[in-house]
Image (tube, rainbow, N blue to C red):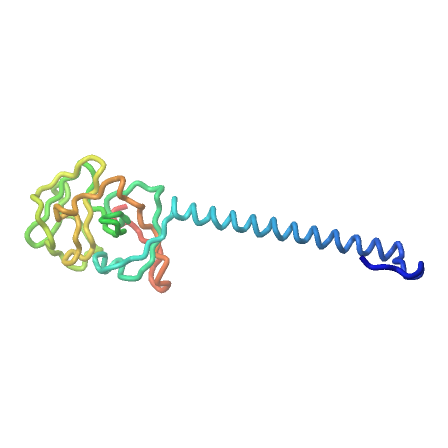
Amino acid sequence: MRKFNDLSELPTAEQLKRELNRRRYKKGFRAALKNTVSSLAVAAAAAVLICWIVLPVVHVTGTSMEPTLANDHIVLCSKLKTPSRGDIIAMYYNKKILLKRVIAVAGDTVDIDENGAVTLNGKPLDEPYVRADARGECDIEFPYTVKENRWFVMGDNRETSIDSRYSAFGCAADENILGVVRVRLYPFGLPHLLENPDA
């Protein structure tokens, strides 16, 4: 603590008031800064949690969804929508996240001929997203009726995709679906909204 030799060195009442105000401002600023940082941290954590729970972001790997989605594309999914025919879904398979298109839902009957042309409930399926028909890796018996809480899925690149046509893969189970793909976030030059052609 500073020592004063005589009364003339003592601070005036005005100086004391200014110093007191400075210290109060400094203390208030620190408290406000601490509260702001805490609030931002909580908001960021909540945003990350909401994104993971409701709107997961998925990085596309592989070529099974070409030409619609290619390797290294990044997409945003929604867990709020129940998958329907034509939707692209993100799903868990062997501890990986795969993207496939819903071809048929519970109760639908799927048939695929030797050339890979798909028939759904007795009618040829219009598939503008497929570059070329191919039977691909297929060992199940057709016609095939989809069971309850299951989705028959296929990749748009029918030649290379391993999907519901293969018995070891099977239909997508409700509990393995991460979400419905809604938006392409990257690359920026391509259309962002991924519309369902059957909607």
